[in-house]
Length: 433
Image (cartoon, rainbow, N blue to C red; front, side):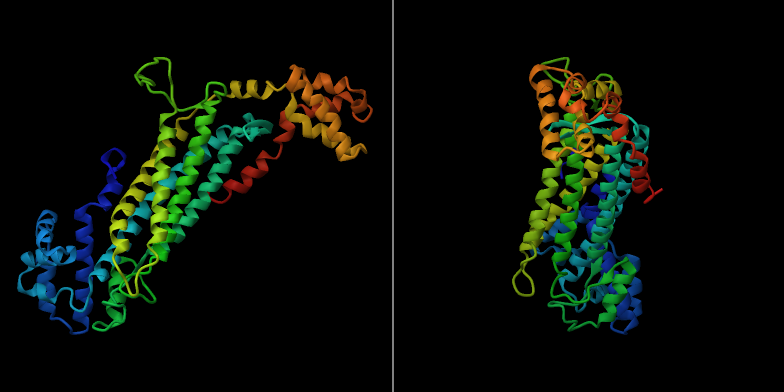
């Protein structure tokens, strides 16, 4: 991922330094297990632990000759350790190191993403309660429907992020597996106890079965979960972008002092942060497609997945981390305009009450078809002639013989339609207090 979208903590996980040091931790943990089995001398382990180190630049230099990154890594470690380095990597294959270390990195990345989700949920909860009773017109197909509250919308998003958190916790567990089972996964040269020791030391679970690699359905699931989370953030961003449209203007991104919206038009205040989130979501989604294609490898393994994972793992996790932080900041500082919400609710002259009137008529004995026809007749005058819905309803004798004026006035009160907001908030926020 380019530096522009890389936050330091997540970027560090995918640095060469962290990658090689994680490889080294796998090798040392395996050596520890081999000492317990008397496969290598304890004195060699002591030397390895004391002297082992890595130099990413040197590894890259060696790889230019070897054309093999793990061999280059082992050669560089041997330059520090000396003769006892021959006891490293005994009975192991490259993927024992690569896949086990990759699992560690994915767990590290997941932990950062989970912190990001928690921060977003905290912001959503605070803003949801702030606007719990702030009435806003609901929209379906982009057209005014019935009232909601802005807090209700945010509670809905909180609930979605709660599900995303559960998904990521499960996906993290699915990829938190290691393997030290050899060239085709048969433990031909090392017993399973070595794998068990390594995994325990690194906070992983041994893969119940593997071939040369950990099976890529695990990683496909992980990156699909990242794509789902990115989709949620895109959804939130799209809504902010719609609400900031000049014709709507019910909410907008915070505009900093000195900020410029357009190189040409000084008046512009554009939702650039949300648009950026929508764009980055496309990048994260693309990683899911790649991960799904990585499942089908030849026989016990080929390396067609490897090059792709070197790109998608850092890009997807760094990208999602950036998106999460950016969207959390947007939500935390979002400017909300209740008066504009009220004004927009009223521009259709009360049409938000059309279903309430319809149901009154049905309860009074009309068929649904007849009630619908009568209410729609009045509603179309509002759309086509700019009439007032209340005025049209009370002037319609066919309607008023089944409903009184007080009931019509009550129907047009938007608070009636959002009266269950407290129940919904209790359902949503009792999950995580």
